[in-house]
Image: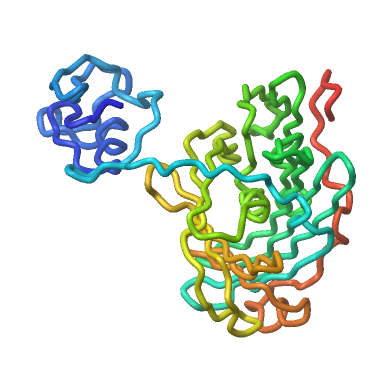
Length: 319
């Protein structure tokens, strides 16, 4: 792809620079914030040759990733294997949630499996950095090699925040926007996963260092498809969890060389630890998961797979 080097005459060293310059920032010439939409120069390298174009100040509408000169991003070969769907077992698991080593909350994860689909039900309660999170996520996937996403529902406390359902190669649904519900339509590729279900994909992979697969994932925050995800078994290592030391295989989910999450899975298909770039979830008992919670954080949850809050979208058969 193209390598961006300067924006409006200012050298780009980080993605933060690009965000700052494209959204405005103080202009030395004007002494005030330049207007969004004004024409500015964008310098870049393409095929080893430098060039520049005029663009409107603001979002570029392209996807960017940090790169370092002299450091390539080699693509691992994808491993041929038959996904082990039997590794996804029905039942419930409880996790302690920690941030910087401190207990901040807990998560209950439940799995239901039938002949045609896999359903994941996750409920997260945490309090950290002045945020009180009460998040429910329901993911329904086809019981096929790629666990294709069929529907996704998310709610904060009792308020629905997103619903999507697959039909004819598209995801249809809606999300609250101010006082109304905005309809959503997302074109999806064949190998699409929810970021909430990457751990399930890891479960179906071989317990073998070097195993690798590629897929696309739905960015639930932006409601957009992100491609070029890599999930590979990076190591077999001994780790310490809330339940004690254990030997596990570590699976790293990366995108353009940046690790987005990690999953430690035992040979008997238990996900004993997950790292979400700052937050860690460690498998434990229901009693230990809700012990020593931050003050004011309730341990009470509705039953697994309880009905999700409804999101009403007038004229849609999906709600």
